[in-house]
Length: 268
Image (cartoon, rainbow, N blue to C red; front, top):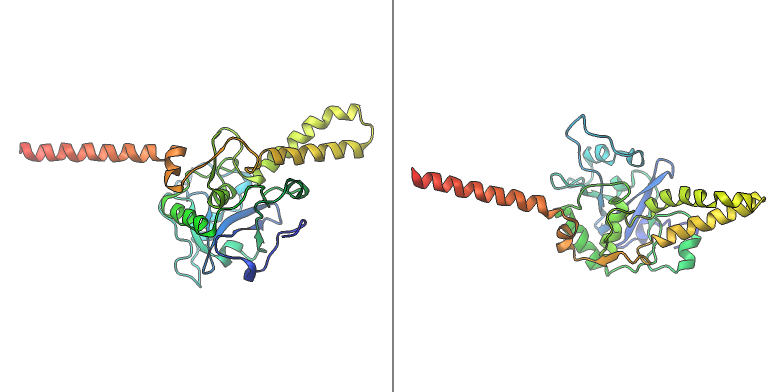
């Protein structure tokens, strides 16, 4: 991949690759795992059945949901997802939506990471083997990836987990997403560099310092250098994130209800 662009041709991608494409004239990118056979597994907000539901953040205004609900003329299973899950299987054409194809870089050096000013294009963390990546993606297709959150659990977080198996321990901070880190890092860098305007009369000097702070804030939140990430097996993911609690409670309630029904029958 190049320093300036990660753009690739379709013939260059392989099963297990982390791919992405830009939406809304390069305003943000949408990420997924290429699993082969022109199919991509990616993470979107769940369908909202309630018309009064809270709208998604402006970063998610592209509305992947409505576009995926339309039938694909090429692949009958395009758009498959489990009920109440945001993980979806689509064909490559529907994923790209006429956009260009890009491939995410793994295991890059710190200098290369910092040189790529835009977040959400690379990480210093190494990728796991393709078979492990595809296993995680297909497992999550069947079991879900929790609730979609623009800053803590988005499409890039999903693909980064599939590729590395790394999970952020601190769920109160920013997630693994480089895009989210960039959105937070830019205003933070500008804020921190504001006092320097009193010491540096040159706008060039202030701009240089601000850019440096921005790049360092991105680097500090990269999963390859963070200390608050752990390796979690995909089968244990629901337990680690607390998704399994509600399901277990429902199962216990159903079991208790069945026992009461049996007792009523025996009494009769």
